[in-house]
Amino acid sequence: MYIKVTKSGDRRYIQLAESYRDSEGRSRQRIIANLGRLDDSTSQANSILAALLQASGQQTGEGNEARLLSTAQFESARALGDVWALTVIWKQLGLDRLKQLLKLKTRHRIDLEALLRLMVFNRLCDADSKLGALRWVKTVSLPEMDLTSVSHQQLLRTMDAILEHQDVIDEVLADAVRPLVNDDLSVMFYDMTTIRAEGLSEQADDVRQFGKSKEGGIGRQFMLGLVQTAEGIPLYHEVFPGNTAEVDTLKTSLLKVVNTFPIKRVIAVADRGLLSLESLGELQQIVLPLGQPLEFILAVPGRRYKDFQTLLAPFNEHVQSVTSVDPDTEEAEVFGEVEWEGLRLVVAHDPERAAEQTTKRDAKIAQLEARAEQWADKLDSQDEGKKSRGRKLTDGGAQARFYREVCEERLGLIMKVNFNSELFNYDIDEEALARARAMDGKLLLVTNTKDMDVVDVVTRYKSLADIERGFKLLKSDIEIGPVYHRLPDRIRAHAYICFIALVLARVMRARLRANPVPDVVSSERALWLLRQIQTHKVHFEGQDPVVGISTIGTEQATILRSLEVKKPSISIPYVNL
Image (cartoon, rainbow, N blue to C red; front, side, top):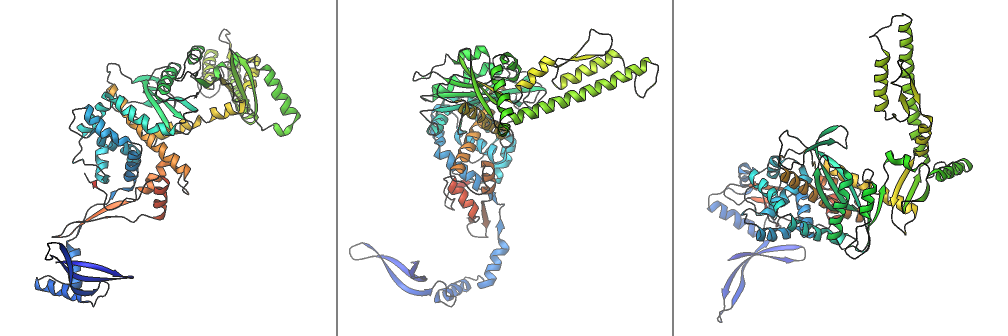
């Protein structure tokens, strides 16, 4: 016998039914008794339930509920929403294919795909060290994973396997982002950043080298090159030693990308520091798999602006004439181009930025001149026998201090200290100052594109700022550095894990932009709100535990729809480690 619930309109009725076989042996069901309405406290069903509890010696009604509550044991709530959304996106991108592929390639008994997924999710949800990741997994419910335990050694073995089978992961990752790349035209942005590394040990082929950091200063570091599309989807990354010249990395990275993605036309955009005559010659020799030449837009570093002074003289005259004749153009950007080395040299002049740079430089010069005048007066007073507060000043000491301050302000080409003189003095190179003022507010770009006008070239280059936001995400929320690993392959594996996390974050950002959610414009914000969707488990004495998921709010439901992720249900399998 069993209990059967039937519906009639908006009412539900309880019936006692049984299964039997008829004379021909077929299974049938029949109703033995109607026990009344389910929502009626005076129904016969409640009377029967109370009689059964009393006959078995159990309490009934409120007393029974109180007994159950007194024996209830509540487990700590665990975050589900953020890891659930990432799990669905991971599968949508086809990254779960790694489970079978890595199993075929390796002899590891551990689930490499699940452990890799765990480390990637940790970078996005609560970035921490590998030991910190073990603490993090105890606060979340991991959907659709069959892990029974996770150890620090397993995570390290997974990192080793990542580099050992990088070709497999590269192929799966390329398949995941390939639908997001325009096959006809792709504007690829390339840039490099420095990642701080800790430790004093020395390893063979160590990537931790001392170099000048992007944040300033000299430190032990490695360099990370990143290629992404105009839509912000990362395509490729590579780790270089911390003292590598940026110019030497551009060709290597671009060749690997164009050979991976069969794109008909590629325009590579790169920042200052990557331009040299050698690199230009090498870039012009790159041919895409379909036979088209690689196109590029490269920024000219400021230190080389003086090489173009004569070439840009007509453009500077044009800028002066335009801004002096028409006051309305004083804040409008002026564009132009000239030919240089068989390439297009595109120039953009921003009058407002030019005025800011000129004013800032003039203020620094005035401040240094005032300082020099004070020291000169003090030296003259000392020569006259007058006493003053502080240590005695010498001409050589004044020259050294003034030269140091001039260099710190990067005005060494304009303010020149005369070290050949016995007396403290300096000169201002008026030609160098005029040359600097003429280059204020200018952006110089070298390109071999034929069909893009100057405004489009400048606009494409300015979009390079998005890759800087990617580096900021890597360094802040994903926390790629500082790195405490000492082995070169472990450092590369750590960077790879962070790169995959960046891919997921940028896919989330693209979906949020396609389907906007008010006040939610970043993957970090979306994950933070989804993290509030939690699993709960309650244990009652003598009964199976009760499992539930917290209520999904309107904003959380909207985010899930925007990310193309269905709502988690109580039926989804998950594991609590």
